Image (cartoon, rainbow, N blue to C red):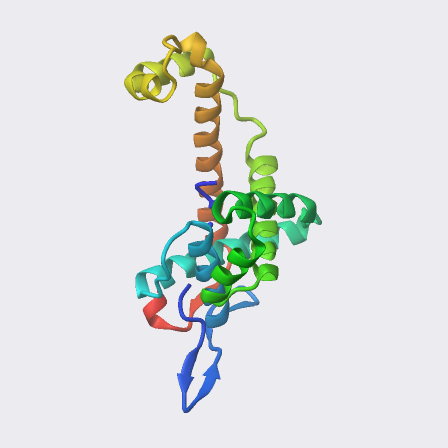
Length: 213
């Protein structure tokens, strides 16, 4: 998922020692709060192995992701297809723990704590990302057909890059399955982006904090 595939702004503002959780954006009838932006950004930066960054630019990107997520949630609610995929998310979490923290629960928990996150919040985000990936695949893959001619054309345009990535496979026939997968993925992503643009036109999006627009 380039959509993603998907994430912090400081979620709250301090005023006189009190945490203020403001409404940042309204999407239809749903509010995105500053705490939502903060959590989204912290989880995304953790998953991407990025240092914490609460700049306005990062907060704006988080807001746009959250707007897209509200559009997807609305569509899923209408279709009645909102499986949480808990077992799959736990498998991804186990893989992440093994690859980045040498299977140490304590190390992963400590890093999450430094970022103001809990394991439950991380698992929730992984579940949601899997739901989104399934939504994209089921909604936008049907009807995507890549011809042999398109595979050969892609090979001719990217032959040098493909041969570097897959040494020993020097013909379109050798690389056909991988090329077909790449082209299909690009087309699915375009279909998804087109859908998001159209969906944004059908719902009221009101930015309550000007700096995030």
